[in-house]
Length: 554
Image 1 (tube, rainbow, N blue to C red):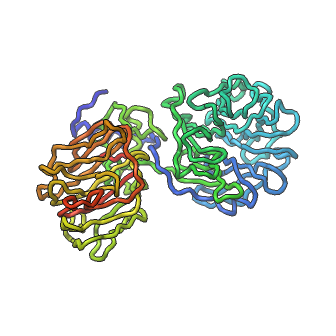
Image 2: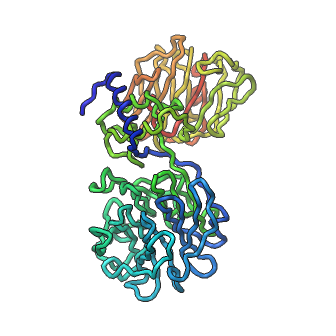
Image 3: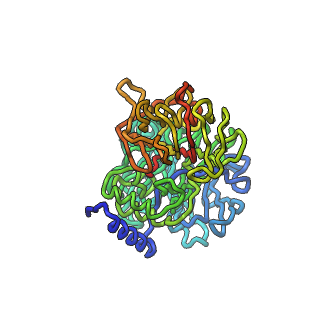
């Protein structure tokens, strides 16, 4: 379907998508992470607690622990997802023998529990087993070894059963299973139905498996995301490496290039064993932070659906998406989670429609100086702890801003300095500022000793940026749009990982290809240049400075 770029077509699509959501259609958006939370002393013990597996209904959390009695599988339950977890219960001697049992993975119906054990009678050092029960209220039956087709003569571990029960992902630890890539590898075995036998495991191959250790897989309920642990290069450290995710558009497609979940999840303290909730809203994992025994943690997965960064999801965001309908446009490709499917289509619109008219606390807003103070030497950061220090003798204008108040700078020695906010080389980001006044050559925002992010040329006052790549061929990005005409203008710079775009009044006025940017760990100057040279100080009003660690489409 080819769309025209008209308001009537956009409104028809908005109404259509809203109707789909009301009638029961459901998909999930791209996400950012909340703050990791320790599950606390009720669930975690003074021993090690690891290998979490959340049930499909979110009411049971199975995990392994080496608390007194040996390495066993335990389960914590709760009446509803809004209730706290009850005290964990050992699964008992039928499942937990005198050997070590851990790595639980519960089927979607709650009637089969896959795990690994080193009990006698297996094919290797560690084997995979399954125990079943008739109903969720019945006891677990005697575990059954999955047999020599699934289990190798080495160590097999980390089972993860798919939602339909027909695919079982697992790890083989440097064992004799033919077809490995050198380190620990992830494999999958399949069966035609739940009554059929499991087939020969197949190595997932590159790019999931490498010569390094790739293990501890967990498959999402829709089968489109595979989370796993890996110590491959590009991570943040730890013996087990980091948590990564690979995705595919459909269950018939190949897996894509894995992506590290980033420093919010990964650290030097062995974050591993991920488990994703069925609705994709919560990630469970274990971590050795603080240093000592391993604990169970969780963090929320929050959709990024406010495309234009105005604090609410509405028809404007949908219209942005419709403008890129049918394109491989990463900024709008938010469904399904976590990295989209390579095309902007009805799935992405459904994601937005699920959040229509929600006011959002945008965790990607890493700094926000509203400039609404009445007096004093501090410009408060309403998003984080990056309060700015006011220098010179600027004047607060409580009623003179475009959005409430603003700060009046004299163009001589007035400016605001802030702590470090972000390194442009680390990834996508956006910055938007309301300004009024100014003169040619003056700077709105710069990074100390780095680059002038938003400034005007010395001849006519056109908006420019000199934030560029580190190579010799990199250059400033100029526009042909004057911003010093005495009117209010919202100016912005967006880097989406491959393009720089300058905006004036939410309209793109200059764009180029830029694969990377020069890095800097320094703080920012609001209202003067990177070196604070005479002539770079802003003479006019500055209001509502916002910085995001994502690409925002105004």
